[in-house]
Length: 252
Length: 252
Image (tube, rainbow over all chains, first blue to last red; front, side, top):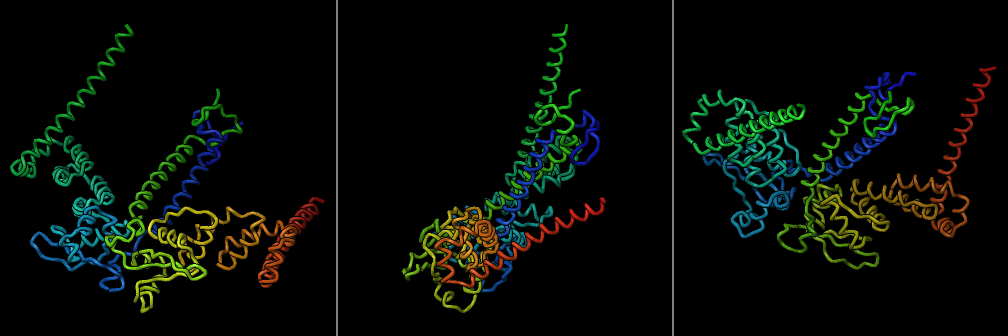
């Protein structure tokens, strides 16, 4: 008698059998429970998500009590971005220290942030209200910097994960330098893997020559990591051979 | 050769087989993806959840700009509960209308709420910040009333679902009356099912006699719903018999 799969109805050969009926029904029920949990969590997220103060523009009706201003590298101030102290404080310990103590920012209600673009600051503030963000490489890099500054781990992780997906042998050296500067360990490790696999090419690029001049310590760090990793690989290969050799000796 | 389940390792008899390997692996992978989605959503909820203004007590550091006061049935005012207009407005259209227009509440920054206990109002405000709530029957009833008043559907649904799980033949009549008063359709229907199944007993209780005197229209509504449901059941039974009869005639 042919045994058929409950799901696709194809005939099951002995080596094709997956589960018994009980286990299959168990997994299916578990899946339904997970879907239910997802719906509950989605409803919570929808409820908790705040309409950003940006949606209200400068209307007094949004009850904002603080203003953020972005300063570009050449010291030009952006238009002000309104926000609520209570929201900023709840999302970042840095904002808490800044706004709950006797500081220039708490007195004036103005937070000045340097080396960030207006767009990036707007996106940052919007994220604090909604957890929503639309990333490209440039935005992810800028937001990684600002979320590192304000210790917003949730956004920092998101940007780091995004940048890891965009790594190539060509951009790995600059990504490594960037990651080292902003303490992004996950990105740093992933970039290093790309560098190790392409060391011969990378060490001949202009970017590498430039870096060696500007920051030789960083290049040394990179070589040290490279050496440790190479050593680990060699050790792994040697251990594998030793094990094989031992097994062979046992057989004799 | 014995066929074994991939999951529990028991021997599969033909009628015990659940899925083929491919379908099983598919379901398992789908389950892992759902678990991953749950983790992402949980992180979002954690990020978006605000520490309630209640946690700060009356400290000026929490940047609150509105006060809520509960008034009991006999007009006694509760201690004030501090909150943020921006949060209340983002959670409820009623608060929006109240605080964004030229009203007594927006001018004074005081919202007076009648017929609610201090505890229920505190729990309500805390929910608006966190989506967290610990329910018992009394709290669920009170929160259903206040969330109906302020049109906070997310909390209203939660209370209604909780109260449905607590229905018994004994409390179904009062639950029905309560549900009708606060437009809780799901609770009203569930209570009606209990009532219909126990109409003979319920129509002899003191609560029923009392309700008949106080609100005869509601009792009429209940009987009408009862009659429609009974008719539906009878129609279903008749249709079933007609179908059976037709099948029988076809066979002759």
